[in-house]
Length: 468
Image (cartoon, rainbow, N blue to C red; front, side):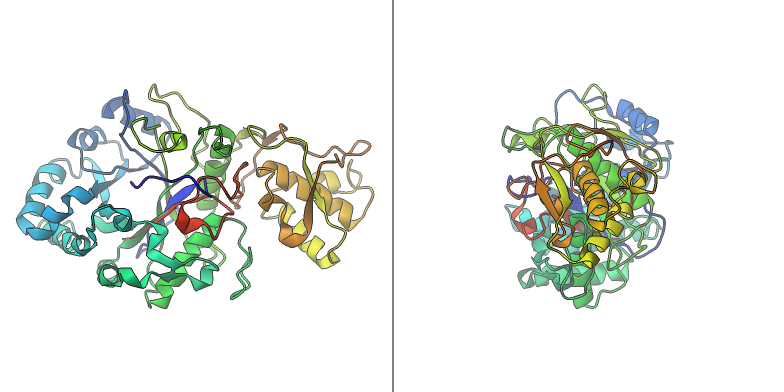
């Protein structure tokens, strides 16, 4: 997987476009570029203990594949870029690979996807012309043994394949990649496969985007629509948030990582879809299972894991997306700020913001109900201020979290009064079953961004898309 360079976003995401429907699934990425990781057998046990049912690996390591035999865990395996030349040149190379690396362990180990190549537009060596021939050879090999309808083939790409991603409805693929994208898309449609891609109000459609996750997914959707590939669905093959970084990487905290991944899982489990595709089922693989200390680059690059090598949990995650998870707000976010309603906007703007905060925004608005501590004064500005601040504090205390279409404004004066106490940084909240995926704290426009995601700094993300 390509390095995540420092700049504007802290989460990243890989998309997969699929040709069939099912409930949204959440899996985990199992990278192994680290020292002292537990053996594959212990990893398989850990994954089963966490009730994780879907795992992505980046090669076809035999020990790993064997470890997941008879576990009911479904694997997505990969053909690395280094193997594309051999896979594209000779069918016999692929037949031998399938015979030695897949068939001896299938179906005891359930393999559902094979990704051929990864983020090829980011590769230092131009291998783009090799991908589709390699995919076709893998398909032919699977067809010979009757597995072409049981194992789906695709490839992952960075958002660099897009020339435009904002607004989402203007999403378009970079024309310089047409030589391999068009035949790849045709292959994916032909074989009902997904397109994989790496990691606000749309003025063209009027659709409201409350997080970058949805905006970037929809930018891929509209880019596909522009090329008349309307039937492909999207799967996220990598997305996550680092829990540790260098001094300047203030957004990389366990709180932020927990918030992002918890809300993301709920977004998926609830089949919330996106503004352009409401109710659409999207599969997601969270990056990553372990920290990977051998990775080059900035500090956060090595700290995306949910677990340490000793298998201890870095922060808790509810993989069902149905329960409650206690999240400590605070960490490295700036203290002593609140978000209140502006007095210089229309009542309609305030009401829309209030409705959103108490609805999709997942704010507990019971305190502004009749007979409750914050009901008086019974004014729209007062009620909106309480709701805006609750959302603001729960979602990182960032400028974006206090936006509300211009209806919110930050203040350093505590708006609490009498027995009405406004949430502040450091408060402990118990998350509810949310359908929104708000930005974690510290996600400033100067952190963790890749150049291709600078236009949508709402949820720091790096996206990879694939077609099933």
